[in-house]
Length: 375
Image (cartoon, rainbow, N blue to C red; front, top):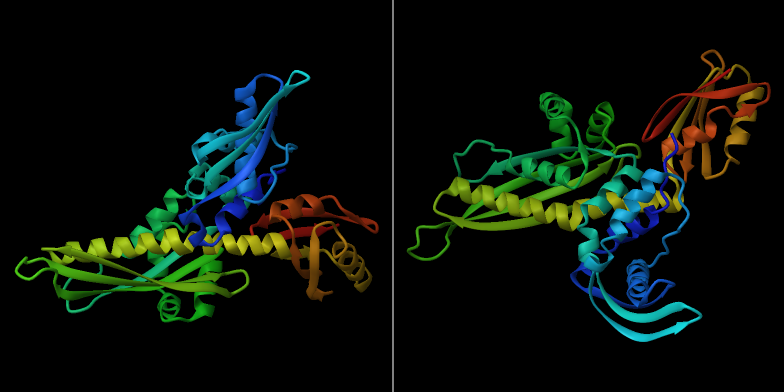
């Protein structure tokens, strides 16, 4: 059950930096030491430069061997992230080699590293995303090809995101709730997401227009796609933000041109907005605690209710604990927590905890909830 997120802060820092910052490299100075040789000292300095470029320190201590291997896979790419470096100082003292370098680090390359993204998503307990996009083709007879929805889904999947099953999604689109969500009803989008276990719902509308001939006499049609997306966090019901991205394509076939324009706008939306917004929300969780709903059954007296509530709110990593209700007849206690960690870590912390003469047993957990029995 134990999951290590020692390297998570580095990855979060990488992925939530404003998109504009990735257009340039970052120049930093770093030092390296080695008892082997100068080249090894340079490698250590390069590693330190990458860590310094993202503004954090990677702790050498780890808890899970698997994670050590994954972290080392990323840091083994250190030289690939550095676009240039200059040795400023070097010396050998007491059999130890020392170098100081100035290095130029590409944040773009780190951000695009799929292993880094997958470790980040694993630390987020692989949040599930649901995509609902309506497409309209102005002045065109083409049927709804769902190009934008397919492209967004494909791009997020390639980055390692888990998405709602396609068959389930097709079934959901038949519901009135789906139409309401596409029309802008946030409560409907949240409800749909919760039904299918999605932590994020992306709803949007894509419109394609024929804006005339690309070049006089060329016969090429110029097609413009406008894709508007909105991201809803289902466990809080918050709208994390919205974006509009445009794409233009010229082609002799209006349908082909429309498809290309839609794919272009979808790529912009995913690469320049969606990924950063979702990981940004997780940064807020790290800073202020993730919202996790705790259900505890078997709480049969007010004394037990008070005992459990007071103990849990003082537990390690519990930022806040809000009482969501208690019913003596049903014996159910509900607490809305802000917890600095994952639901799995909370489950591990709670399982077996003794309060009074009884203890907690975790019976179930999901990314946004933990269920326990008090006996």
